[in-house]
Image 1 (cartoon, helix red, strand yellow):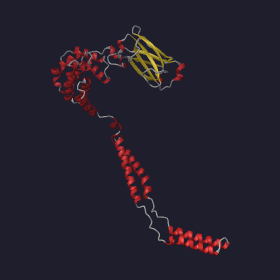
Image 2 (spheres, one colour):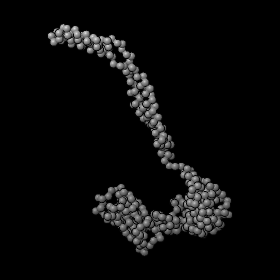
Image 3 (spheres, helix red, strand yellow):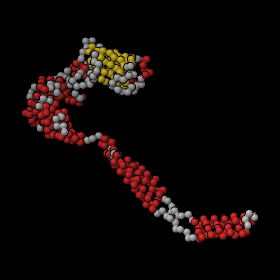
Image 4 (cartoon, one colour):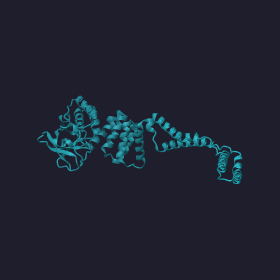
Amino acid sequence: MIFILLSTGMIVLAAALVAVPLWRVRPRSSPSTQAANQAIYVARREELERDVASGRLAVEDFDAAQRDLKRELVPAAAAPLPEPVRTRSARWVAAVAAAAIIAACLGLYLKVGNWRPAVEGVHAASVPKVEQMVAELAERLSTTDQNDLQGWIMLGRSYVLMGKYGQALNAFNQARQLSHDRSASALAGYAEALTLQDPSVVMTKAAPLFEQVLKLDPRNAEGLWYGGLIALARGDKSLAIQRWQTLLTENPPENFRRLIVTRIQAAGGTIPAAVITEGKGIAVHITLDPALRSKVTPDETLFVFAEPVGQTSGPPLAVRRFQVRDLPLQMTLSDTDSMLSGRKLSDYAAVTIIARISPQGNPLPQPGDLMGQGRWQENTAKAVNISINQSIP
């Protein structure tokens, strides 16, 4: 509302700056020819009289000059004065100008402007509604991209999040047909939507599907979670615990992790030590060479990477981000810092730990970045000490 009031005020002010001067134009009269001629006649006659008195002009010449002056000026002086020419149309021009400016401003704003941030808020105007995005995805898949397997899976998951389980089943069914039931994600999504739509069919319809999912992908998150619940319902606690323990090693979100731990403990199981310690942790101690401290500022970014020994390209195994002000730094890299699902730090017996300071906050190495590195070996399991003491050329 404030934006609208300010905008309206500015438009009106712009119109007023143009219209008011036009509106206030005073009635304009033609120059008074009668008054001007009378003044000229008097001045010329006085000049002639002075010339006669001074002897520069003869009397007979004075009489002739006076007759000529009367003949030229007096008739014009005697003519009636013309009516003043009033610019009454100026006010119409002012009104039209003001209206044109206001109309132009509004028209231009409606064409290229965006009023929604002022009325609905920046967030509502700039972030599309989830429903609209899902509708656009559904339209695209049903018209031009009917063979997009990942698109149908994404649509199905979106419908599940929205609680539209019937539509989710349709989307996942399309994905199942495209994959010929060889996609664990499509099959798991269908079984989950079926379970959420009607929990009474879990054991009869959904359970066989989840078992098939685990055959296709033994580490599928939905398959492990629901497979554990199904195993527990059948009285097979050991299988339920085994599946949930496997799920814990997949580094689930913290809130989901707590739920899994609760289920395992309720079933009489234990939490693996590797899970409790968040996988194989590598203790790292990082310092900055005093000779380089003047080349950095406290706000610059410090990246700590773990890479397989000998890797020259590709994403790191794990990464954490700090700032120069955190130095000297003691920290631990573990599976929870993994970059990619299924590629864990604990799967490697030897890794290179790299500490790099980036003034631009760029995770990719840049000339001028300061760095240091060290090596970790599983058979020694010692902490890695790194000194940042070199500059990338």
